[in-house]
Image (cartoon, rainbow, N blue to C red; front, side):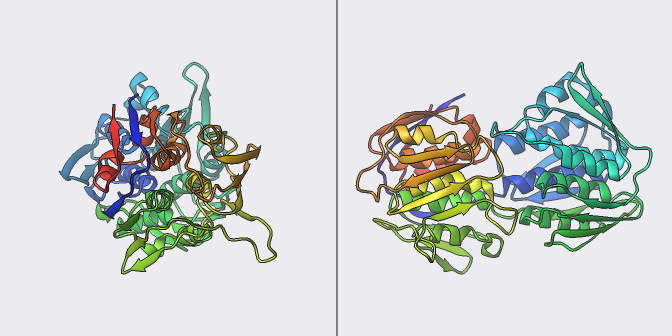
Length: 434
């Protein structure tokens, strides 16, 4: 699985460019199955989850060419739908959460799809009811295969309908959009997720000939079309990586500039770090973080302890709560972190407690952090990354700790962060990959 050996206490300095957005990449790559024409996608991150999805499309028969470091062309002229019944597909699909978004485009274009139990981070229950209920509204039927533990999804014809999502699921919204664009008639999706990833998917599909209205809101209207064409698309920078770099700068008292961040698409992320006392300066489309010896957490107006929680967009993405939590361990003041969406995502805090952090895990969803105010550093430790976001939080903790730490199972970090050790070492970090 590999490991990182991290020498703590190193200050960073310089400029770094964020990778393309992982979550957007998984969506738009699946969307290339909606047409037989060529699609070019730029700024694709070189990370495990994305590379595994690209290989799955190759195995399906999609013609894929890498035309530059982060640019690919996709042409799904001859898709072998029989591959969905192979053991190889079951194995690869069940190891990759993003594979769930293959349902929408394959159902829309080929009127059938297969879904093994998808993999991904072990952060609690991640139900698929939102996907299934919406697809049933469009005319799909489901059959569960006990032997292979997978769902077979079919539709003789897909017809638009009114769909009220039971939760604002990002992947559920993406799947329904990709199904509805080739369905007959009008589809309305209410309580839709409206993250920048979803907006980007909608803009790409419209360039392909789809008719999607209400982009950026939670009420999408879609008029189905008979076919889609090719297009060019460029991914946004990854907002989670940008937030991770802000956290690293604060924890290591470093001065760094994050370049080309697409600031207008970051939502409340910069202000969430400002509430922890971290100074940010916006210069053109760059974020400059000056070196700070200390930072103080705000209180609510009445003086009570600040609470930061995740919420559907334009609220705070749950993917950054692990980073905000670890940054708070060295702040002046206290904070309650409330992870509403996933009941297992805060369990990594026991590792931070072993490093000297003062954290009370109130229940599976809430943790109170009493900041050390940098009066003493975290201790080095032998750690294991349980998932992508906890992994990067532990890396940030190790970079700020006193002594040399080891993080095992770094495959979890590599799933979401491109060459993170090499890029941070160029700024002054000391990370060795084993």
